[in-house]
Structures are given as structure tokens and as C-alpha cells.
Length: 105
Image 1 (spheres, helix red, strand yellow):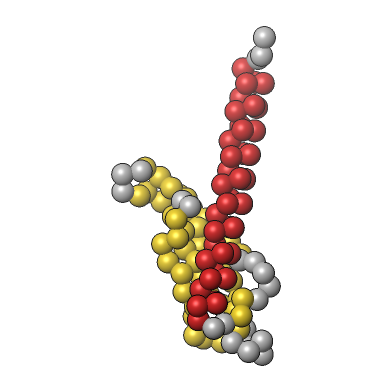
Image 2 (cartoon, rainbow, N blue to C red):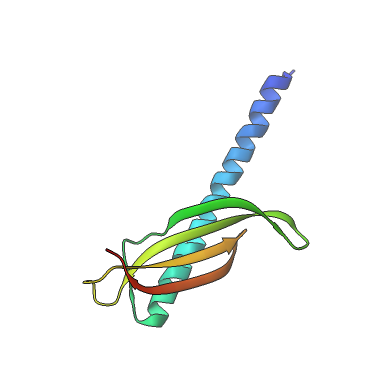
């Protein structure tokens, strides 16, 4: 027979794995969105990744709470400048993606 403590540990472990897999999928979507946006704009996607900058729960219409994530990524026009763009997601859905025109120092 499993004790209540062991059962709780199993449930917490399952939730942690589910959160981890959800985070991996979201980052994969953010990176693909950033790559596609850079290609469409004639820019070069730098560093091969996007960095999670914001993570919080946000209420959405009809589906309760979903995770709000904002990723930053670097891109360049000619590899001599470095600029930042962002991808915003609610759950696994991209709600906003943009390239920013300002140079970073």
C-alpha cells in the first residue's frame, strides 16, 4: 500500500515533468517563430535560441488560467549590429512577435 506522502510525491513529480515538457514545447515554438520572423524580414537570427524573460499565470477568456511567456531573442541585419526581438505566448499560442528597431549596446 502506498502512503499519502508517497502518493503526494508521485503527483508532484508528474506535475513537474508535465511543466518541464510544456516549457520545452513553448520554447521550441518561440524559437521557430523568431527564426521565421527573421527570415521574412531579411534578418539573421543570432545565437540559435530565445531566452525566457517573463513567466506568469494569466487569466484567459473561456479557458481559465494559462501561462504567459515572453521570450527575447537577438537578431542582426549584417552581423555587425545586435538587436533584440520578442515573442509573446499565452499557453502554446503565439500572441505577438516583433523585431525592435533599436540597437543594443
